Amino acid sequence: MTFNENADISGGKASRRSGGRGMKIGGGAGGGAILIAIVVLLVQHFTGVDVSGVAGGLSGLQGQQIDTSGDERLACTAAEANKDANCRIQGAAAMLQTYWADQVRGYTDPQGIVIFDQSTTTGCGSASTDMGPFYCPNDQTIYIDPAFYDELAQQFGDTAGGLAQLYVIGHEWGHHIQNITGTMKGKNLSATGASSDSVRLELQADCYAGAWLGDASTVKDENGQTYLEPITADQITDALKAAAAVGDDHIQEVTQGQANPESFTHGTSTQRQKWFNTGLNGSPGSCQTFGIPASQLG
Ligand SMILES: [Zn+2]
Image 1 (cartoon, rainbow, N blue to C red):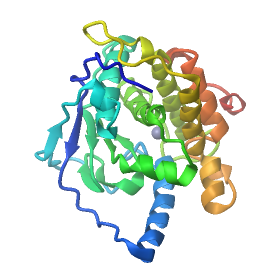
Image 2: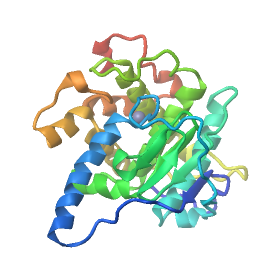
Image 3: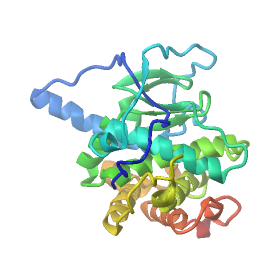
Protein backbone atom coordinates (compact mmCIF):
# COMPACT_ATOMS: atom_id res chain seq x y z
CA MET A 1 0.00 0.00 0.00
CA THR A 2 1.51 3.29 -1.09
CA PHE A 3 0.26 6.82 -0.59
CA ASN A 4 0.41 9.08 -3.62
CA GLU A 5 3.18 11.44 -2.59
CA ASN A 6 1.33 14.38 -4.16
CA ALA A 7 -1.74 13.84 -2.00
CA ASP A 8 -2.56 16.33 0.73
CA ILE A 9 -3.13 14.48 4.02
CA SER A 10 -2.83 17.58 6.21
CA GLY A 11 -6.54 17.45 7.11
CA GLY A 12 -6.23 14.05 8.79
CA LYS A 13 -7.28 14.44 12.42
CA ALA A 14 -4.65 12.41 14.22
CA SER A 15 -2.68 13.49 17.23
CA ARG A 16 -0.02 12.07 19.46
CA ARG A 17 -0.59 12.14 23.19
CA SER A 18 2.42 12.40 25.45
CA GLY A 19 2.52 11.30 29.06
CA GLY A 20 1.89 7.54 28.95
CA ARG A 21 2.17 6.15 32.44
CA GLY A 22 2.62 2.46 31.72
CA MET A 23 5.41 0.24 32.96
CA LYS A 24 8.36 -0.22 30.69
CA ILE A 25 9.03 -3.85 29.95
CA GLY A 26 12.58 -4.74 30.95
CA GLY A 27 15.01 -6.89 29.03
CA GLY A 28 16.30 -10.32 29.98
CA ALA A 29 14.52 -13.66 30.14
CA GLY A 30 11.85 -12.45 32.56
CA GLY A 31 11.01 -9.56 30.30
CA GLY A 32 10.41 -11.93 27.42
CA ALA A 33 7.92 -13.99 29.40
CA ILE A 34 5.99 -10.90 30.43
CA LEU A 35 5.91 -9.75 26.85
CA ILE A 36 4.35 -13.02 25.64
CA ALA A 37 1.66 -12.82 28.31
CA ILE A 38 0.87 -9.30 27.23
CA VAL A 39 0.65 -10.28 23.59
CA VAL A 40 -1.98 -12.90 24.37
CA LEU A 41 -3.98 -10.47 26.50
CA LEU A 42 -3.70 -7.79 23.91
CA VAL A 43 -5.08 -9.84 21.07
CA GLN A 44 -7.86 -11.18 23.25
CA HIS A 45 -8.76 -7.65 24.13
CA PHE A 46 -8.72 -6.57 20.53
CA THR A 47 -11.55 -8.99 19.94
CA GLY A 48 -13.29 -8.19 23.19
CA VAL A 49 -13.65 -4.53 23.97
CA ASP A 50 -12.85 -2.56 20.91
CA VAL A 51 -16.08 -0.59 21.21
CA SER A 52 -15.21 0.23 24.71
CA GLY A 53 -17.37 1.85 27.31
CA VAL A 54 -20.45 0.66 25.49
CA ALA A 55 -19.24 -2.90 25.90
CA GLY A 56 -18.54 -2.21 29.55
CA GLY A 57 -14.94 -3.26 29.17
CA LEU A 58 -13.40 -0.21 30.80
CA SER A 59 -13.82 1.44 34.12
CA GLY A 60 -16.28 4.30 33.74
CA LEU A 61 -15.01 7.85 33.85
CA GLN A 62 -17.95 9.39 32.07
CA GLY A 63 -18.39 13.07 32.60
CA GLN A 64 -14.85 13.53 33.83
CA GLN A 65 -12.51 15.90 32.09
CA ILE A 66 -9.96 14.24 29.83
CA ASP A 67 -6.55 15.89 29.78
CA THR A 68 -5.81 16.61 26.14
CA SER A 69 -3.26 19.34 26.85
CA GLY A 70 -0.41 17.06 25.80
CA ASP A 71 -2.01 16.23 22.44
CA GLU A 72 -0.01 17.30 19.45
CA ARG A 73 -1.64 17.23 16.03
CA LEU A 74 0.45 15.33 13.49
CA ALA A 75 1.60 17.27 10.44
CA CYS A 76 2.98 14.53 8.17
CA THR A 77 3.27 14.58 4.40
CA ALA A 78 2.03 11.70 2.24
CA ALA A 79 5.65 10.71 1.62
CA GLU A 80 6.15 10.35 5.37
CA ALA A 81 2.97 8.27 5.59
CA ASN A 82 4.71 5.71 3.39
CA LYS A 83 7.48 5.27 5.94
CA ASP A 84 6.08 5.92 9.38
CA ALA A 85 3.23 4.08 11.16
CA ASN A 86 1.99 7.22 12.95
CA CYS A 87 1.96 9.24 9.73
CA ARG A 88 0.12 6.37 8.05
CA ILE A 89 -2.63 6.77 10.65
CA GLN A 90 -2.92 10.48 9.77
CA GLY A 91 -3.11 9.58 6.07
CA ALA A 92 -5.84 7.02 6.79
CA ALA A 93 -7.79 9.65 8.76
CA ALA A 94 -7.59 12.17 5.90
CA MET A 95 -8.88 9.56 3.46
CA LEU A 96 -11.60 8.25 5.74
CA GLN A 97 -12.90 11.78 6.42
CA THR A 98 -13.21 12.41 2.68
CA TYR A 99 -14.73 9.01 1.94
CA TRP A 100 -17.41 8.97 4.64
CA ALA A 101 -18.43 12.60 4.05
CA ASP A 102 -19.56 11.39 0.61
CA GLN A 103 -21.29 8.27 1.88
CA VAL A 104 -23.38 9.41 4.86
CA ARG A 105 -25.85 12.31 4.84
CA GLY A 106 -25.15 14.59 7.80
CA TYR A 107 -21.81 12.90 8.40
CA THR A 108 -19.56 14.30 11.12
CA ASP A 109 -15.95 13.30 11.72
CA PRO A 110 -14.79 11.63 14.89
CA GLN A 111 -13.03 14.02 17.25
CA GLY A 112 -9.92 12.34 15.93
CA ILE A 113 -7.50 9.50 16.40
CA VAL A 114 -5.35 9.69 19.50
CA ILE A 115 -2.05 7.86 19.26
CA PHE A 116 -0.90 7.00 22.74
CA ASP A 117 2.07 5.29 24.31
CA GLN A 118 1.25 2.46 26.74
CA SER A 119 -1.69 4.04 28.56
CA THR A 120 -4.03 7.00 28.57
CA THR A 121 -7.32 8.34 29.88
CA THR A 122 -10.32 8.38 27.53
CA GLY A 123 -14.00 9.29 27.61
CA CYS A 124 -14.58 5.60 28.31
CA GLY A 125 -12.09 5.27 31.16
CA SER A 126 -8.45 4.25 31.30
CA ALA A 127 -6.94 2.51 28.30
CA SER A 128 -3.70 0.66 27.75
CA THR A 129 -1.90 -0.92 24.84
CA ASP A 130 -3.05 -4.41 25.81
CA MET A 131 -6.65 -3.51 24.95
CA GLY A 132 -5.76 -3.03 21.30
CA PRO A 133 -7.14 -0.18 19.19
CA PHE A 134 -10.70 0.87 20.03
CA TYR A 135 -13.40 3.44 19.46
CA CYS A 136 -14.92 5.29 22.42
CA PRO A 137 -18.47 6.48 21.60
CA ASN A 138 -18.57 8.86 24.59
CA ASP A 139 -15.89 11.14 23.19
CA GLN A 140 -16.18 9.91 19.58
CA THR A 141 -12.47 9.23 19.47
CA ILE A 142 -10.37 6.32 18.20
CA TYR A 143 -7.46 5.30 20.42
CA ILE A 144 -4.47 3.34 19.22
CA ASP A 145 -0.97 2.50 20.36
CA PRO A 146 0.83 1.51 17.12
CA ALA A 147 2.84 -1.03 19.14
CA PHE A 148 -0.28 -3.15 18.58
CA TYR A 149 0.77 -3.72 14.97
CA ASP A 150 4.07 -5.24 16.08
CA GLU A 151 2.30 -7.52 18.53
CA LEU A 152 -0.15 -8.62 15.84
CA ALA A 153 2.73 -9.44 13.50
CA GLN A 154 4.66 -11.30 16.22
CA GLN A 155 1.73 -13.41 17.31
CA PHE A 156 0.17 -14.21 13.97
CA GLY A 157 2.89 -13.84 11.39
CA ASP A 158 3.28 -11.26 8.69
CA THR A 159 -0.21 -9.82 8.82
CA ALA A 160 0.65 -6.25 9.61
CA GLY A 161 1.58 -4.67 6.29
CA GLY A 162 0.47 -1.15 5.45
CA LEU A 163 -2.95 -2.15 4.13
CA ALA A 164 -3.62 -4.39 7.13
CA GLN A 165 -2.85 -1.37 9.33
CA LEU A 166 -5.37 0.69 7.38
CA TYR A 167 -7.94 -2.09 7.78
CA VAL A 168 -7.66 -1.76 11.57
CA ILE A 169 -8.25 2.01 11.39
CA GLY A 170 -11.09 1.54 8.89
CA HIS A 171 -12.73 -0.96 11.25
CA GLU A 172 -12.65 1.45 14.20
CA TRP A 173 -13.95 4.24 11.96
CA GLY A 174 -16.76 1.86 11.06
CA HIS A 175 -17.81 1.89 14.72
CA HIS A 176 -17.98 5.69 14.55
CA ILE A 177 -20.29 5.39 11.53
CA GLN A 178 -22.48 2.99 13.53
CA ASN A 179 -22.52 5.49 16.38
CA ILE A 180 -23.51 8.57 14.36
CA THR A 181 -26.04 6.72 12.20
CA GLY A 182 -27.79 5.23 15.25
CA THR A 183 -26.96 1.60 14.46
CA MET A 184 -25.54 1.08 17.95
CA LYS A 185 -28.73 2.32 19.59
CA GLY A 186 -30.79 -0.36 21.29
CA LYS A 187 -28.27 -3.09 20.55
CA ASN A 188 -27.15 -5.49 23.24
CA LEU A 189 -23.44 -4.80 23.16
CA SER A 190 -22.55 -7.03 26.06
CA ALA A 191 -24.14 -10.09 24.46
CA THR A 192 -21.83 -12.79 23.18
CA GLY A 193 -22.48 -15.65 20.79
CA ALA A 194 -22.13 -16.46 17.13
CA SER A 195 -25.15 -14.40 16.00
CA SER A 196 -25.18 -11.79 18.80
CA ASP A 197 -25.57 -8.05 18.23
CA SER A 198 -21.87 -7.71 19.13
CA VAL A 199 -20.81 -10.04 16.34
CA ARG A 200 -23.15 -8.31 13.86
CA LEU A 201 -21.73 -4.89 14.77
CA GLU A 202 -18.17 -6.14 14.42
CA LEU A 203 -18.78 -7.82 11.07
CA GLN A 204 -20.46 -4.64 9.82
CA ALA A 205 -17.41 -2.62 10.93
CA ASP A 206 -15.22 -5.05 8.96
CA CYS A 207 -17.49 -4.57 5.96
CA TYR A 208 -17.30 -0.76 6.27
CA ALA A 209 -13.50 -1.04 6.35
CA GLY A 210 -13.65 -3.14 3.19
CA ALA A 211 -16.02 -0.70 1.45
CA TRP A 212 -13.63 2.16 2.13
CA LEU A 213 -10.54 0.23 1.00
CA GLY A 214 -12.37 -0.97 -2.11
CA ASP A 215 -12.74 2.68 -3.12
CA ALA A 216 -9.48 3.84 -1.57
CA SER A 217 -7.54 4.25 -4.77
CA THR A 218 -10.28 6.49 -6.24
CA VAL A 219 -10.86 8.74 -3.21
CA LYS A 220 -9.35 12.15 -4.01
CA ASP A 221 -8.13 15.07 -1.94
CA GLU A 222 -9.29 18.66 -2.54
CA ASN A 223 -6.77 19.07 -5.35
CA GLY A 224 -8.05 16.04 -7.22
CA GLN A 225 -5.09 13.86 -6.24
CA THR A 226 -5.90 10.27 -5.28
CA TYR A 227 -4.72 9.46 -1.77
CA LEU A 228 -3.43 5.99 -2.63
CA GLU A 229 -1.73 4.27 -5.49
CA PRO A 230 -3.80 1.32 -6.73
CA ILE A 231 -3.92 -1.51 -4.19
CA THR A 232 -2.39 -4.82 -5.27
CA ALA A 233 -3.87 -8.30 -4.88
CA ASP A 234 -1.02 -9.25 -2.50
CA GLN A 235 -1.83 -6.32 -0.24
CA ILE A 236 -5.50 -7.32 -0.17
CA THR A 237 -4.45 -10.85 0.77
CA ASP A 238 -2.37 -9.46 3.63
CA ALA A 239 -5.28 -7.38 4.92
CA LEU A 240 -7.54 -10.43 4.68
CA LYS A 241 -4.99 -12.41 6.67
CA ALA A 242 -5.18 -9.73 9.36
CA ALA A 243 -8.98 -10.03 9.35
CA ALA A 244 -8.62 -13.80 9.73
CA ALA A 245 -5.99 -13.49 12.47
CA VAL A 246 -8.38 -11.51 14.66
CA GLY A 247 -11.32 -13.90 14.18
CA ASP A 248 -12.67 -15.14 17.51
CA ASP A 249 -12.18 -18.79 16.58
CA HIS A 250 -8.56 -18.32 15.56
CA ILE A 251 -7.70 -16.27 18.65
CA GLN A 252 -9.32 -18.80 20.94
CA GLU A 253 -7.60 -21.72 19.23
CA VAL A 254 -4.24 -20.01 19.67
CA THR A 255 -4.79 -18.86 23.23
CA GLN A 256 -7.09 -21.55 24.69
CA GLY A 257 -6.58 -24.57 22.42
CA GLN A 258 -10.17 -24.58 21.15
CA ALA A 259 -12.89 -22.22 20.00
CA ASN A 260 -16.04 -21.63 22.02
CA PRO A 261 -18.70 -20.03 19.78
CA GLU A 262 -20.86 -19.00 22.75
CA SER A 263 -18.22 -16.50 23.81
CA PHE A 264 -17.70 -14.99 20.36
CA THR A 265 -17.94 -11.20 20.19
CA HIS A 266 -16.37 -10.41 16.80
CA GLY A 267 -17.11 -13.35 14.51
CA THR A 268 -15.01 -16.16 13.10
CA SER A 269 -12.05 -15.76 10.76
CA THR A 270 -14.23 -16.89 7.86
CA GLN A 271 -16.98 -14.42 8.74
CA ARG A 272 -14.58 -11.51 9.17
CA GLN A 273 -13.00 -12.24 5.78
CA LYS A 274 -16.40 -12.67 4.17
CA TRP A 275 -17.70 -9.30 5.35
CA PHE A 276 -14.46 -7.47 4.61
CA ASN A 277 -14.74 -8.87 1.07
CA THR A 278 -18.44 -7.96 0.84
CA GLY A 279 -17.52 -4.33 1.53
CA LEU A 280 -14.47 -4.46 -0.73
CA ASN A 281 -16.55 -5.60 -3.69
CA GLY A 282 -19.62 -3.55 -2.78
CA SER A 283 -20.45 -0.38 -0.87
CA PRO A 284 -21.48 0.52 2.69
CA GLY A 285 -25.04 -0.33 1.62
CA SER A 286 -23.90 -3.95 1.15
CA CYS A 287 -23.04 -4.21 4.84
CA GLN A 288 -26.43 -5.49 6.07
CA THR A 289 -25.38 -7.69 8.96
CA PHE A 290 -28.55 -6.97 10.94
CA GLY A 291 -31.94 -8.42 10.08
CA ILE A 292 -30.51 -11.49 8.38
CA PRO A 293 -30.52 -15.04 9.75
CA ALA A 294 -27.39 -16.24 11.53
CA SER A 295 -26.75 -18.72 8.72
CA GLN A 296 -26.20 -15.81 6.31
CA LEU A 297 -23.53 -14.19 8.48
CA GLY A 298 -21.02 -16.59 6.95
ZN1 LIG B 1 -14.69 -3.61 16.47
